[in-house]
Image (cartoon, rainbow, N blue to C red; front, top):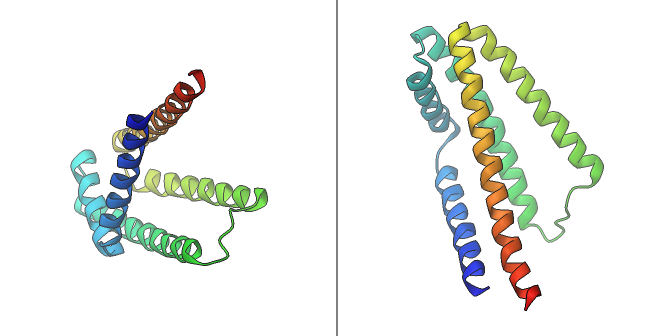
Length: 149
Protein backbone atom coordinates (compact mmCIF):
# COMPACT_ATOMS: atom_id res chain seq x y z
CA UNK A 1 0.00 0.00 0.00
CA UNK A 2 2.83 2.40 0.80
CA UNK A 3 4.52 1.64 -2.52
CA UNK A 4 1.35 2.48 -4.44
CA UNK A 5 1.01 5.77 -2.57
CA UNK A 6 4.66 6.63 -3.21
CA UNK A 7 4.20 5.89 -6.92
CA UNK A 8 1.09 8.11 -7.07
CA UNK A 9 2.89 10.91 -5.22
CA UNK A 10 5.85 10.62 -7.57
CA UNK A 11 3.56 10.72 -10.63
CA UNK A 12 1.75 13.79 -9.29
CA UNK A 13 5.08 15.49 -8.57
CA UNK A 14 6.36 14.71 -12.08
CA UNK A 15 3.13 16.00 -13.61
CA UNK A 16 3.44 19.21 -11.59
CA UNK A 17 7.04 19.69 -12.68
CA UNK A 18 6.08 19.09 -16.31
CA UNK A 19 3.27 21.65 -16.06
CA UNK A 20 5.65 24.18 -14.51
CA UNK A 21 8.10 23.66 -17.37
CA UNK A 22 5.41 24.43 -19.91
CA UNK A 23 4.29 27.48 -17.95
CA UNK A 24 7.74 28.98 -18.46
CA UNK A 25 7.14 29.21 -22.20
CA UNK A 26 5.34 32.14 -23.75
CA UNK A 27 2.39 31.45 -26.05
CA UNK A 28 4.61 32.44 -28.99
CA UNK A 29 7.25 29.87 -28.02
CA UNK A 30 4.65 27.15 -27.52
CA UNK A 31 3.06 27.93 -30.90
CA UNK A 32 6.44 27.81 -32.62
CA UNK A 33 7.33 24.47 -31.03
CA UNK A 34 3.97 22.99 -31.94
CA UNK A 35 4.19 24.28 -35.51
CA UNK A 36 7.66 22.80 -35.95
CA UNK A 37 6.48 19.42 -34.65
CA UNK A 38 3.57 19.52 -37.06
CA UNK A 39 5.94 20.47 -39.89
CA UNK A 40 8.02 17.39 -39.15
CA UNK A 41 5.04 15.04 -38.95
CA UNK A 42 2.98 16.45 -41.79
CA UNK A 43 5.66 17.83 -44.16
CA UNK A 44 4.06 21.29 -44.28
CA UNK A 45 4.81 23.88 -46.96
CA UNK A 46 5.95 27.40 -45.98
CA UNK A 47 2.48 28.87 -46.53
CA UNK A 48 0.90 26.07 -44.47
CA UNK A 49 3.43 26.71 -41.71
CA UNK A 50 2.47 30.39 -41.58
CA UNK A 51 -1.25 29.64 -41.37
CA UNK A 52 -0.80 26.93 -38.75
CA UNK A 53 1.56 29.16 -36.76
CA UNK A 54 -1.25 31.74 -36.55
CA UNK A 55 -3.71 29.07 -35.44
CA UNK A 56 -1.33 27.63 -32.86
CA UNK A 57 -0.53 31.10 -31.51
CA UNK A 58 -4.21 31.92 -31.15
CA UNK A 59 -4.83 28.62 -29.34
CA UNK A 60 -1.76 29.01 -27.12
CA UNK A 61 -2.87 32.48 -26.03
CA UNK A 62 -6.36 31.21 -25.17
CA UNK A 63 -4.87 28.27 -23.24
CA UNK A 64 -2.54 30.59 -21.32
CA UNK A 65 -5.45 32.85 -20.31
CA UNK A 66 -7.51 29.85 -19.16
CA UNK A 67 -4.56 28.34 -17.27
CA UNK A 68 -3.88 31.62 -15.47
CA UNK A 69 -7.57 31.97 -14.61
CA UNK A 70 -7.69 28.41 -13.20
CA UNK A 71 -4.48 28.97 -11.27
CA UNK A 72 -5.71 32.19 -9.67
CA UNK A 73 -9.05 30.55 -8.92
CA UNK A 74 -7.35 27.61 -7.19
CA UNK A 75 -5.13 29.91 -5.15
CA UNK A 76 -8.14 31.92 -3.96
CA UNK A 77 -9.73 31.20 -0.61
CA UNK A 78 -13.15 30.56 -2.11
CA UNK A 79 -12.24 27.80 -4.57
CA UNK A 80 -15.25 25.70 -5.52
CA UNK A 81 -15.57 22.86 -7.97
CA UNK A 82 -17.58 23.79 -11.05
CA UNK A 83 -21.28 23.01 -10.96
CA UNK A 84 -22.89 20.56 -13.36
CA UNK A 85 -24.00 23.44 -15.60
CA UNK A 86 -20.52 24.99 -15.60
CA UNK A 87 -18.92 21.65 -16.49
CA UNK A 88 -21.44 21.16 -19.30
CA UNK A 89 -20.68 24.65 -20.61
CA UNK A 90 -16.91 23.98 -20.50
CA UNK A 91 -17.30 20.66 -22.32
CA UNK A 92 -19.45 22.29 -25.01
CA UNK A 93 -16.90 25.08 -25.47
CA UNK A 94 -14.08 22.55 -25.74
CA UNK A 95 -15.97 20.50 -28.32
CA UNK A 96 -16.90 23.63 -30.29
CA UNK A 97 -13.22 24.62 -30.32
CA UNK A 98 -12.23 21.15 -31.53
CA UNK A 99 -14.79 21.30 -34.34
CA UNK A 100 -13.61 24.76 -35.38
CA UNK A 101 -9.97 23.62 -35.29
CA UNK A 102 -10.78 20.56 -37.39
CA UNK A 103 -12.52 22.71 -40.01
CA UNK A 104 -9.61 25.16 -40.12
CA UNK A 105 -7.10 22.34 -40.47
CA UNK A 106 -9.20 20.79 -43.23
CA UNK A 107 -8.92 24.08 -45.14
CA UNK A 108 -5.15 24.38 -44.65
CA UNK A 109 -3.95 20.79 -45.15
CA UNK A 110 -4.25 18.55 -48.17
CA UNK A 111 -6.15 15.25 -47.87
CA UNK A 112 -3.13 13.11 -46.95
CA UNK A 113 -1.89 15.61 -44.38
CA UNK A 114 -5.35 15.97 -42.88
CA UNK A 115 -5.74 12.19 -42.56
CA UNK A 116 -2.35 12.00 -40.86
CA UNK A 117 -3.23 14.92 -38.56
CA UNK A 118 -6.50 13.24 -37.56
CA UNK A 119 -4.62 10.03 -36.81
CA UNK A 120 -2.14 11.96 -34.64
CA UNK A 121 -5.06 13.54 -32.76
CA UNK A 122 -6.62 10.12 -32.19
CA UNK A 123 -3.29 8.66 -31.04
CA UNK A 124 -2.86 11.47 -28.51
CA UNK A 125 -6.41 10.97 -27.25
CA UNK A 126 -5.85 7.21 -26.86
CA UNK A 127 -2.56 7.80 -25.08
CA UNK A 128 -4.18 10.19 -22.61
CA UNK A 129 -7.09 7.82 -21.99
CA UNK A 130 -4.72 4.91 -21.37
CA UNK A 131 -2.63 7.05 -19.05
CA UNK A 132 -5.71 8.11 -17.09
CA UNK A 133 -6.94 4.51 -16.87
CA UNK A 134 -3.54 3.39 -15.64
CA UNK A 135 -3.52 5.99 -12.90
CA UNK A 136 -7.02 5.09 -11.78
CA UNK A 137 -6.16 1.37 -11.75
CA UNK A 138 -3.05 2.06 -9.67
CA UNK A 139 -5.05 4.09 -7.19
CA UNK A 140 -7.76 1.44 -6.97
CA UNK A 141 -5.23 -1.37 -6.49
CA UNK A 142 -3.75 0.35 -3.47
CA UNK A 143 -7.18 0.95 -2.01
CA UNK A 144 -8.37 -2.60 -2.74
CA UNK A 145 -5.33 -4.14 -1.08
CA UNK A 146 -6.05 -2.24 2.11
CA UNK A 147 -9.68 -3.36 2.06
CA UNK A 148 -8.90 -7.05 1.57
CA UNK A 149 -6.71 -7.34 4.61
